[in-house]
Amino acid sequence: MLILKNGYMIDPASGIEGYRDILIDTDSEKIVRIVPRGALAEEMASTVSDSIGDVIDLTGQILAPGLVDVHVHFRDPGFTHKEDIHTGAAAAAKGGFTSVVLMANTKPAVDNAETLAYVRNKGKETGIHVYTCANVTMGLQGREMTDMEMLSAQGAAGFTDDGIPLMDERLLREALQRAAKCGKPVSLHEENPSLIKNNGVNAGKAAAYYGIGGSPREAEISMVERDLRIAVEEEADLSIQHISTKEAVELVRRAKKKSSHIYAEAAPHHFTLTEEAVTRHGTLAKMNPPLREEEDRLAIIKGLQDGTIDMIATDHAPHSAEEKAKPITEAPSGIVGLETALSLGIRELVDKGYLSMMELIRKMSLAPARLYHLEAGYLKEGGPADLVVFDPKREWVVQDFASKSANSPFVGETMPGVVSHTICGGKIVYREGTVR
Image 1 (cartoon, rainbow, N blue to C red):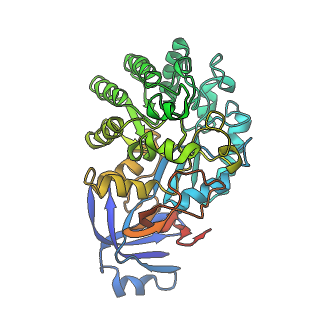
Image 2: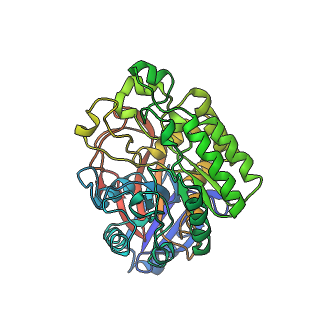
């Protein structure tokens, strides 16, 4: 047994918040009781004293459902010098995440039963829940469909060719139809490569600074417009990944009025930074889609406020220091995000008055869990004992990553929001200062 006492509980599923004590059965991995602060007290402790494994006083801290990230790259198999499933899971736990959904652009790609089984089995060796998407097309080539029905039956959480857009409209329509029959979402990377001269850098001030063509906003807008039209027609669950432009936010807003199957995610870096960060941090702020302008950043925040953007997802994309040391046009795109996401949400959205803490937790747990039909994102008696404990006021310095990589423009910054415990399946998988 595990007792968590004196924590300020926030549960986005019920809308309940307030001081609570929680009793967890570590064997069944379930929450046994949620009661007002002090109600467990002596009588509860005496009832279960022989089986209590730990009692943790959470005074001054928030107790919430374990965070859920449905867009991460653990680079395993194929690129384990950047990250592997074990180090990625450790980074997730340190950041307060108990469930993650991996993207499928590995080598080999997750377009077959063997690779899918490898990723899922290795994920089971970690302390958190590791799910993975499978590919929409074989080898991410955009030509031949995978056996989506088989991959779904084998445990794929959804389908994506993330990193590469689906240019064939016929294939996209078929993918949406087949995924819908499987009850799984399709998530899309929205950048038309024919419009991009240099990826990862906005075709504006940042591109001009480096004397390159960059990536224009039209590359995203055109793809989002087409894909939303098809998804509305097919009434299929579609998630627009890492939205970066104000126009794309508005397109999603309009599509949601026509269909309840439209979803969108925002990455912390897109609601925090603009293209000026690329001139300051170089390749550490290079990402796909790129950081845009201040109007875009504010439009993304507005989309989070009004529900146009359903969830926050990190697009955790580790790369080695050697890779990021290459020139701006040669270095790979992406930054690590699992260990800084909660703090950025607190600093940029809650502390600045854009979202309540309840709304932030919803977008980082319940909303993504619902899209992928995961048993996560809520606190309830009999429910999963997956929780994060954090102090929203305490500060920490971004350094010493649990991830193999440290490619982040936030290194050295002081941020609010210290995660003290991450509990998954009733077990403490992260305690401040230690990853188990």
